[in-house]
Image 1: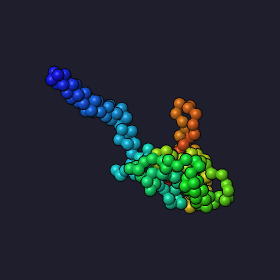
Image 2: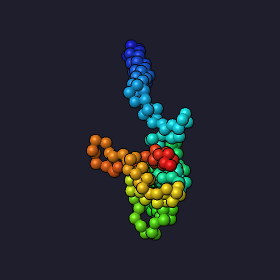
Image 3: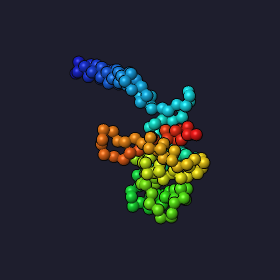
Image 4: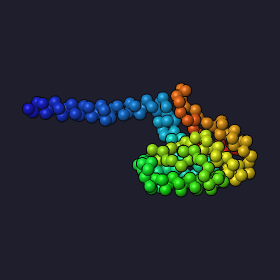
Length: 190
């Protein structure tokens, strides 16, 4: 019996070292060599200062910037509270929130009271941290941004076209735009 316990305990120690220490170290080292930008969080720098990540949305509220999707993560884009609201499509709280958000967006963008909105402009993603918006959501915001910044719509539309990311490898999907990257490029426009 002691022999079997010793073997079991030895196997536990060996597997703990292999799978709990060596394997993570090898994978971390390999990812640092092969994909350093992604392995370090896909951080976006301005000089030496981290301004965000390509992978986590931020809450832009100024009329000068593109706004991202609504976030159900904590008080908005809280990575520590990532997750959806778990409200079903017929839940009265969900419907009230979507209707209130839709009304706010229509007012902010100067749209007619019952105008149709892109779904990602009023629906949070499953994680609540989605950094991307659809092209239609970006285009909906162009008049407001152009007016606020004193720019024409043409350079902003061209910026949207240049920053649109199509789905990889021709897989069907919606072309998307990273809001943080788009806003940084918008700030670079003269």
